[in-house]
Image 1 (cartoon, rainbow over the protein chains, first blue to last red):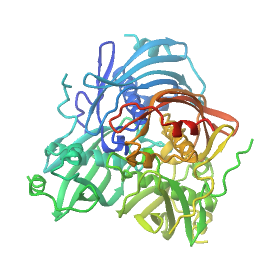
Image 2 (image 1 turned 120 degrees about the vertical axis):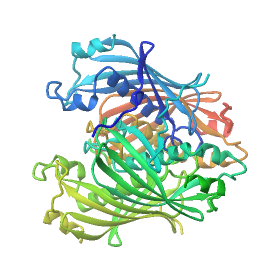
Image 3 (image 1 turned 90 degrees about the horizontal axis):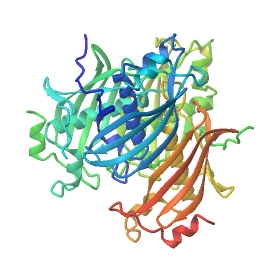
Image 4 (image 1 turned 45 degrees about the horizontal axis):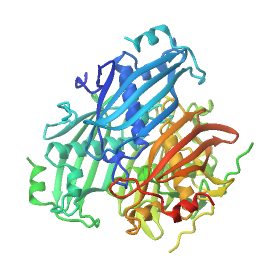
Length: 148
Length: 148
Length: 148
Length: 148
């Protein structure tokens, strides 16, 4: 049986990048009443995963694919500004776009917002590594996707 | 600015209960390769939260509402069977329905599946408590919602 | 360089079972002010992992060991009673002991408490599986450990 | 009944900062086989919380203390370098020290390592806010603690 997946479950390519909506649930908050700071990194990672998915890349498959020799993206550096806090029941918009690419590294810009209010901005450097964790050049097929 | 929330972000009432679709991301998995067992409780809780939301109850508001005296649902008991494992990129269907209600307690039946394959079934007993954590009877307005 | 690991980082075998102390941090709480219910399953799992560790079993090694053919313990069923709530800064005691063993299944009893106050009791059924997820009998060497 | 808390559960002040040892459990890993990147922020936050605790500050109390008007530390900015990956069963050392303080902001340097291998370095800017989330100057009593 095929599941009927809602059109926008994985977000959509838009404005030169990718946009994903995600709900804040209990699990995301802490006793201060707002979202726990590290949870924004989960939302950012969901954004990157679905950005890749919308570009045609499934990370689960990449790691299993023998031609890709267990290729996986790993985060090397993050610069994160926490500007404002989200609360239970909020719907977050996660926007992701590629800023530049150099050899094995990709620099992404990400932003989480609720309506017009920016909550978090992040500059995220990711690298492609093989199954031993060593950096490898982005295959041309992959590299091309980020600038279409 | 209003966010345009996708129709099905909060799932939908169906088959005498509620159905929600959620993606498995990196954060949900562990080094055994499949979803970490405790993460299914997060998916179940998202299902309960959105079941309430579709019935017209927002938990964030309930706790802040003075008339409701900081009322909140808390989980008292769970019986969980882990039948099969989900993997990265899977789309989970979380189904939630009310089985019975007695005074301050509500017994829900929940099921997580991928397509035809059942992953987790759970019987979840929740109670309504006030801001001091003491059990209180479900207001008639609330009680009526679970059997419409 | 060897790290000097504090004596009790992994808890200790005691009272026919295992006892572990763990702190409640920000990450464990939610906006209701107390510990998020699913987090107790993390504390229970840490208890089981360190119970095995104190018995001489390292799960990371088990999965990599060829003789064990990628053997891993997976949770099949949990019956959990949530009796009272923990708060930020609390020190939790997690007590784990074996109740019975039958073929490929092991039934553990666990309890989380703060001082004299019981927070959570759980009956946890785990099974040993191979790398394809199929149940396998506990090797005698392992089985013997749980009743010493 | 008093719990006997192990001496080093909250780490210890050392080398002009604070040192905490924490175990990697199942919950911390993802299907790539190593620790999920966002989990390092949990370890860093545990380090900051216990650094404060060893300096005599309990965040749970601070928020409840009326004199402190619900004061809480919030993270404003993080620059994180992910250098190497931890695995299941590893014991992480989290080192935290104060680099500078300006009005309402505190800049901390943190490092996570396994033995001699550095895994993560982070520069973390935190601010003290009141219960409405507005920045407030560090009370002299607090400020003094960070440079003793």
